[in-house]
Length: 168
Image (cartoon, rainbow, N blue to C red; front, top):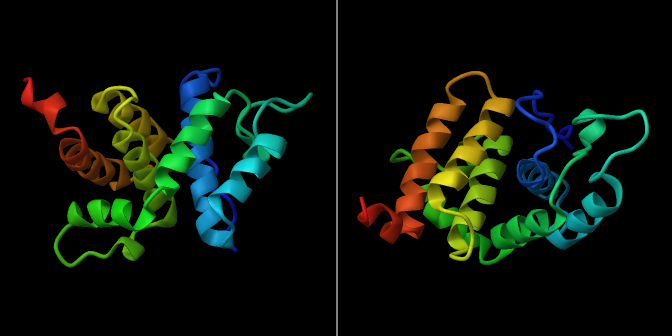
Protein backbone atom coordinates (compact mmCIF):
# COMPACT_ATOMS: atom_id res chain seq x y z
CA UNK A 1 0.00 0.00 0.00
CA UNK A 2 1.26 3.48 -0.82
CA UNK A 3 1.96 5.80 2.10
CA UNK A 4 -0.79 8.25 2.94
CA UNK A 5 -0.21 11.56 1.13
CA UNK A 6 0.87 14.46 3.29
CA UNK A 7 0.20 17.99 2.07
CA UNK A 8 2.75 20.71 2.55
CA UNK A 9 1.50 23.09 5.25
CA UNK A 10 -0.21 26.08 3.61
CA UNK A 11 -2.29 28.91 4.94
CA UNK A 12 -3.98 28.93 8.32
CA UNK A 13 -4.02 25.41 9.79
CA UNK A 14 -7.02 26.29 12.00
CA UNK A 15 -9.56 26.40 9.16
CA UNK A 16 -11.97 23.59 10.09
CA UNK A 17 -13.75 23.44 6.71
CA UNK A 18 -10.44 23.28 4.83
CA UNK A 19 -9.19 20.70 7.34
CA UNK A 20 -12.29 18.60 6.65
CA UNK A 21 -11.61 18.71 2.93
CA UNK A 22 -7.92 17.81 3.35
CA UNK A 23 -8.93 14.90 5.56
CA UNK A 24 -11.54 13.80 3.00
CA UNK A 25 -8.89 13.72 0.26
CA UNK A 26 -6.59 11.67 2.51
CA UNK A 27 -9.44 9.32 3.46
CA UNK A 28 -10.50 8.77 -0.17
CA UNK A 29 -6.87 8.03 -1.03
CA UNK A 30 -6.67 5.55 1.86
CA UNK A 31 -9.94 3.85 0.90
CA UNK A 32 -8.80 3.41 -2.69
CA UNK A 33 -5.33 2.13 -1.76
CA UNK A 34 -6.48 -0.22 1.03
CA UNK A 35 -9.72 -1.41 -0.53
CA UNK A 36 -11.57 -0.53 2.69
CA UNK A 37 -15.05 0.97 2.52
CA UNK A 38 -15.47 4.71 2.85
CA UNK A 39 -17.52 4.14 6.03
CA UNK A 40 -14.66 2.13 7.60
CA UNK A 41 -12.11 4.80 6.71
CA UNK A 42 -14.46 7.54 7.91
CA UNK A 43 -14.71 5.82 11.29
CA UNK A 44 -10.92 5.40 11.47
CA UNK A 45 -10.34 9.06 10.71
CA UNK A 46 -12.89 10.31 13.22
CA UNK A 47 -11.39 8.12 15.95
CA UNK A 48 -7.69 8.40 15.16
CA UNK A 49 -6.82 11.19 12.71
CA UNK A 50 -9.03 14.19 13.39
CA UNK A 51 -8.38 16.57 16.25
CA UNK A 52 -5.24 17.48 18.09
CA UNK A 53 -2.97 15.47 20.32
CA UNK A 54 -0.59 17.00 22.86
CA UNK A 55 2.75 17.77 21.23
CA UNK A 56 1.46 17.38 17.66
CA UNK A 57 0.39 20.12 15.32
CA UNK A 58 -0.43 20.23 11.64
CA UNK A 59 -0.53 17.29 9.27
CA UNK A 60 2.13 15.08 10.88
CA UNK A 61 1.39 11.37 10.70
CA UNK A 62 -1.76 12.06 8.67
CA UNK A 63 -3.41 14.04 11.49
CA UNK A 64 -5.74 16.86 10.63
CA UNK A 65 -5.85 18.95 13.77
CA UNK A 66 -8.70 21.27 12.84
CA UNK A 67 -11.48 19.61 10.87
CA UNK A 68 -15.23 20.08 10.69
CA UNK A 69 -16.23 16.45 11.22
CA UNK A 70 -19.74 16.83 9.80
CA UNK A 71 -18.38 18.35 6.57
CA UNK A 72 -15.69 15.64 6.43
CA UNK A 73 -18.38 12.94 6.63
CA UNK A 74 -20.62 14.71 4.10
CA UNK A 75 -17.80 15.05 1.55
CA UNK A 76 -16.77 11.40 1.95
CA UNK A 77 -20.30 10.12 1.68
CA UNK A 78 -20.96 12.44 -1.26
CA UNK A 79 -17.99 10.97 -3.12
CA UNK A 80 -19.05 7.41 -2.19
CA UNK A 81 -22.66 7.83 -3.35
CA UNK A 82 -22.92 6.53 -6.92
CA UNK A 83 -19.12 6.53 -7.35
CA UNK A 84 -19.31 5.14 -10.89
CA UNK A 85 -21.49 8.08 -11.95
CA UNK A 86 -19.06 10.52 -10.32
CA UNK A 87 -16.07 8.87 -12.02
CA UNK A 88 -17.92 9.06 -15.35
CA UNK A 89 -18.42 12.82 -14.92
CA UNK A 90 -14.75 13.28 -14.04
CA UNK A 91 -13.69 11.17 -17.02
CA UNK A 92 -15.89 13.23 -19.37
CA UNK A 93 -13.80 16.27 -18.46
CA UNK A 94 -10.40 14.68 -18.99
CA UNK A 95 -8.56 15.02 -22.28
CA UNK A 96 -9.76 12.61 -24.94
CA UNK A 97 -8.11 9.23 -24.49
CA UNK A 98 -7.24 9.79 -20.82
CA UNK A 99 -8.59 7.30 -18.34
CA UNK A 100 -9.22 8.17 -14.71
CA UNK A 101 -6.84 5.44 -13.56
CA UNK A 102 -3.96 7.22 -15.35
CA UNK A 103 -4.20 10.12 -12.90
CA UNK A 104 -2.11 10.33 -9.76
CA UNK A 105 -4.18 8.74 -6.95
CA UNK A 106 -4.04 11.93 -4.86
CA UNK A 107 -5.31 13.96 -7.81
CA UNK A 108 -8.09 11.39 -8.28
CA UNK A 109 -9.02 11.77 -4.60
CA UNK A 110 -9.12 15.57 -4.92
CA UNK A 111 -11.39 15.40 -7.98
CA UNK A 112 -13.68 12.84 -6.32
CA UNK A 113 -13.96 14.83 -3.09
CA UNK A 114 -14.70 18.06 -4.96
CA UNK A 115 -17.13 16.31 -7.30
CA UNK A 116 -18.95 14.71 -4.40
CA UNK A 117 -19.25 18.09 -2.74
CA UNK A 118 -20.38 19.84 -5.92
CA UNK A 119 -23.13 17.26 -6.47
CA UNK A 120 -24.55 18.34 -3.10
CA UNK A 121 -26.83 21.16 -4.17
CA UNK A 122 -27.17 22.29 -0.55
CA UNK A 123 -23.45 22.93 -0.26
CA UNK A 124 -21.41 26.08 -0.81
CA UNK A 125 -21.24 27.77 -4.22
CA UNK A 126 -19.20 25.92 -6.83
CA UNK A 127 -16.56 28.65 -6.96
CA UNK A 128 -15.95 28.23 -3.22
CA UNK A 129 -15.57 24.47 -3.66
CA UNK A 130 -13.14 24.99 -6.55
CA UNK A 131 -11.03 27.48 -4.56
CA UNK A 132 -10.85 25.18 -1.55
CA UNK A 133 -9.75 22.17 -3.59
CA UNK A 134 -7.29 24.29 -5.56
CA UNK A 135 -5.65 25.29 -2.26
CA UNK A 136 -5.47 21.59 -1.39
CA UNK A 137 -4.03 20.70 -4.81
CA UNK A 138 -1.32 23.34 -4.31
CA UNK A 139 -0.60 21.78 -0.92
CA UNK A 140 0.04 18.37 -2.46
CA UNK A 141 1.58 19.31 -5.81
CA UNK A 142 4.14 21.81 -7.03
CA UNK A 143 3.99 21.13 -10.78
CA UNK A 144 1.26 21.33 -13.41
CA UNK A 145 -1.24 19.23 -11.46
CA UNK A 146 -3.05 22.19 -9.81
CA UNK A 147 -3.60 23.84 -13.21
CA UNK A 148 -4.93 20.57 -14.62
CA UNK A 149 -7.12 20.15 -11.53
CA UNK A 150 -8.51 23.67 -11.95
CA UNK A 151 -9.61 22.95 -15.52
CA UNK A 152 -11.34 19.70 -14.59
CA UNK A 153 -12.99 21.22 -11.49
CA UNK A 154 -14.30 24.18 -13.49
CA UNK A 155 -15.78 21.87 -16.14
CA UNK A 156 -17.31 19.63 -13.46
CA UNK A 157 -18.81 22.65 -11.69
CA UNK A 158 -20.44 23.78 -14.90
CA UNK A 159 -21.87 20.26 -15.26
CA UNK A 160 -23.17 19.94 -11.71
CA UNK A 161 -24.13 23.58 -11.13
CA UNK A 162 -24.87 25.05 -14.54
CA UNK A 163 -27.38 27.49 -13.04
CA UNK A 164 -24.66 29.16 -10.96
CA UNK A 165 -22.71 29.95 -14.12
CA UNK A 166 -25.75 30.96 -16.19
CA UNK A 167 -26.33 33.99 -13.96
CA UNK A 168 -23.13 35.69 -15.09
